[in-house]
Image 1: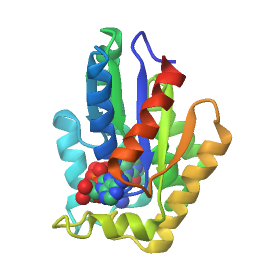
Image 2: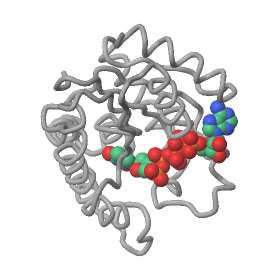
Image 3: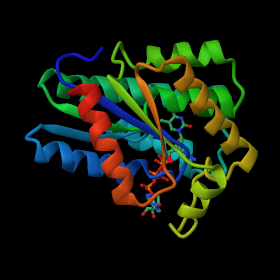
Length: 208
Ligand code: Z5A
């Protein structure tokens, strides 16, 4: 479990609305007088800036899947040590857009790396910090990619095949099935406000 604050992660495929909903959740929790740290992976801090560029932006750098796995894990360990643990220790509620479940879904189910190895590395990189609650926003891969198509610029992972993104979605289902106490799946194919109104009571019920 987390240190003393509460740790909530949002997960799901590209374009499912994690960023939008994690910011709405931050506003909701602040309206209840919680101190909230909002963050995301990959890309926190100096290491995050470099790893994010290599992982997502440098299109001519074709990463070996195991190298990609190691970079996501390096980014996480630094993020946990530098921001997540200290924030939890200060009693903040930490709301994080993607965490170890993304590594299992993308590098394990998506890329097809050895699942046992990926799970061990993804969670070892979390340095013992496990979310109190994880919300998976579920959407068909086609719908998620449609939502981001006008964003202006895609990342290397966005450009993977629809089959890849579908395997990732199915990976998130498997994670939810295997950890029903921690993970809740919410259908994301509904208006932003309606989805936020569905997430808030889940958070209140699960983490108080
Ligand atoms: N990755 C990995 O492989 N392994 C790992 O361990 C980790 C990550 C941690 C990060 O990309 C990539 O890294 C990601 C997984 C991989 N790659 N993929 N594909 P990123 O940081 O650039 O982006 P992202 O995390 O995938 O999220 P995103 O593209 O920003 O999408 P989102 O956060 O889920 O959605 P959003 O930004 O809130 O909304 C997207 C658009 O949809 C936007 O125009 C919204 O206004 C709209 N939207 C949001 N909600 C709705 C609803 N309910 N209805 C209609 N429209 C909506």
